Amino acid sequence: MSPTIFASVIAAAIVSAAVFVGALVWWAVAASRNRHLQRRLQPGSDFEAVFGDPDVNPVLQGLASQGKAIERALDSEGSSDVLMVRAGWRSTTSRLVFYTIWFFSPVLLLAGVGAIAVAGPPKLQQPIILILFAIIALIVGLLLPSLVRTRAAASRQARMRAEVPLLIHTLVLLFESGLSTRQAFSSLIREGRGVLDELGIEIELMLRQIEAGAETADALTRTAEALDVPDLTTVLSLLRQVERYGGEVKEPLLDTLEVIEDRREMELREKVNLISGRMTVVMVLFFFPALIIFVAGPAWVSLIAAFSGMGK
Image (cartoon, rainbow, N blue to C red; front, side):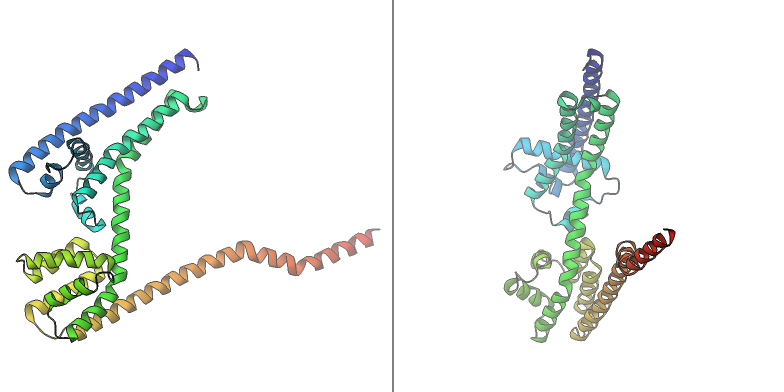
């Protein structure tokens, strides 16, 4: 590498590092102000519980607070806490790990760009390419954790949706034995903890709220809004109406189960139709030419041989 190119590479790396360090300093100041405001306005908030726990390593708290600052700078709609709940990352440990990874994600990717600048192929050590790589690494490093969290939340919502029919069958059996809504949830958690992997966790948290003094209808509403699973929302809305106004619960639950199963049957039919269409395209592109060659090939070979003999 010539001295001019090497100097350009070093200058580009220094500029990228300076920009990134400046952004971290700005985020650190913003995070400090946010923590101060949170402590003054909401002393018992989740923010204080995560970043103000004396039992947690202060260094880890500082790194996680920087990741939280990155999230606050990128999240203009305030949907981060909802996604954390839907992904099942409620504990202090999971939040600390997630925000620490969010802080290190752009740092590691920029370090990879620096490694390319020092020991990479000569074609990739051009200043323009390195600056482009640094910008891409910074953008990907800032956005990748958010995309992973969104994907994890969507995957968990799909798993909870798959458990709704089993939840309905279990509730019908419990209600037939004469249990109330609270007793049914308690029995479900106590005796069927391993049956509903994802919904069992949410029902246990909802039951804790009810045992702490919250109204059953309000707890059902908050759970439905937090998880945002349409089938589960329908079931919880039905239970909320029964809890408030009374009435028969077995038949409405069975009707809801029938509607859910019909809806899923239609979705499966749509998927089968899409797969059939794709297989038709595959057969036309790959199987049909081979079939034509297999069927018409001997005839074409015979015709070519016959015309060749006539020419002679």
